[in-house]
Length: 80
Image 1 (cartoon, rainbow, N blue to C red):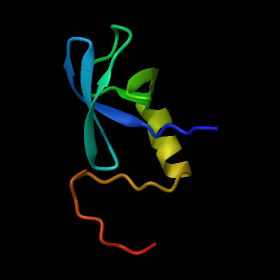
Image 2 (cartoon, one colour; image 1 turned 120 degrees about the vertical axis):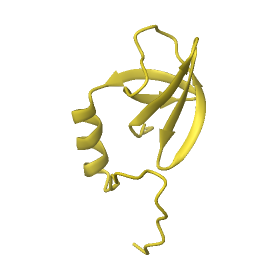
Image 3 (cartoon, rainbow, N blue to C red; image 1 turned 120 degrees about the horizontal axis):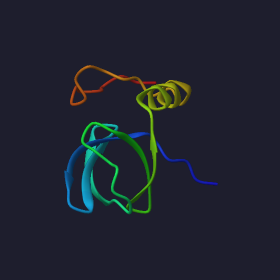
Image 4 (cartoon, rainbow, N blue to C red; image 1 turned 30 degrees about the vertical axis):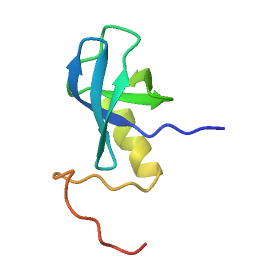
């Protein structure tokens, strides 16, 4: 079983997008056309597999124990 962490679209460039999750950015393939900057998506094997609502993304991140901050690039030096 695989798990896909909700990922935010930062920039769309043709059939590719720059996405950010857990403070990391990467380029992924978009196999469909309705993805826009600011959308939340699920990515698997370098491709967007689903678009989800911001509410779904926040709920999933909360269930996974992944805190959301106003500043995504904030240092996380906490020991869990």
